[in-house]
Image (cartoon, rainbow, N blue to C red; front, side, top):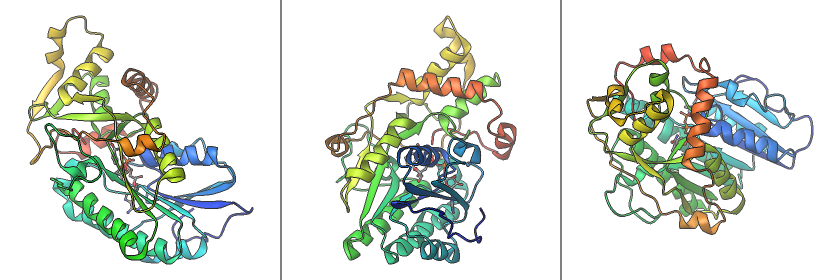
Length: 352
Ligand SMILES: NC(=O)c1ccc[n+]([C@@H]2O[C@H](COP(=O)([O-])OP(=O)(O)OC[C@H]3O[C@@H](n4cnc5c(N)ncnc54)[C@H](O)[C@@H]3O)[C@@H](O)[C@H]2O)c1
């Protein structure tokens, strides 16, 4: 269904209506698939503008389900957003839609402000005015800036260091101001790096997998000592459903893991797995260090006690998660138009 077609569709009565923005992207699509399966008496509406990093194939498991509707639309279009909230009685919003690639944010920061800040503001206003009961605003660990030693809890200040994280921090402030000013029930989540099947190729894990599949070297920004905490996408999906069911309005929830790898270690693990190397000495043949980002955060350790108190903990081990992920990319080599993706990018892509 396209942006301006009639949205007053549901043929049958549903108990709730959930709007997911950015649901054709990586995390959003996993959440949509899960919501549609777990809540057959809820109507799940997925709004996505179908940007380069999205794929309707991500929604194949649910596209025929009676409680699922896809609408191609832009959260930055005031007319569309007003129309959407006017014709649908939306109870819950999951706001995933965003410009998400850190490297790209250095090339076109204004686009990140437009989508992540202005788009969020527009959505908040419409959701507030239409009486939405819960608005889950999806943010990121990157808003904390980096830390070499202490882990961040939700009270730590925001110190974003790149245009992506700055736009996400600003969007969070808008969301939380709706709680402070109007008691509009906003919940903010900040998660570590997420990985798993169907992630677009610009992010570090699929990028390394693709390069190795093409017998190319893994390109690593700067020293490669920067590390990331990696959460498997099924665990993050569970976290979002937990927040929806048990999260308190006005609260911020870190969604984190203790599992941490430097980008160099990540590349080495993938090289060993995919190239069956018998000697560590051969690892260097598959790694190339390239110019660093203008600003590179070292790590984002999170304290996730608040989520643990809601009953959520990550359950998929790294060994299992990365096995499933590599297997998926090996079984689906043509899922993304990878050649085009590589050629579109003039700079090597890396950690994001
Ligand atoms: N991937 C991670 O590791 C990670 C970690 C923490 C937080 N997050 C946050 O989670 C959310 C989802 O991330 P992801 O990795 O799934 O991103 P993604 O890039 O895979 O998906 C983003 C989706 O948003 C859509 N979109 C972009 N602009 C839009 C617009 N103007 N209107 C409608 N749709 C639009 C895109 O088409 C795409 O489908 C983002 O808000 C991101 O900041 C991601």
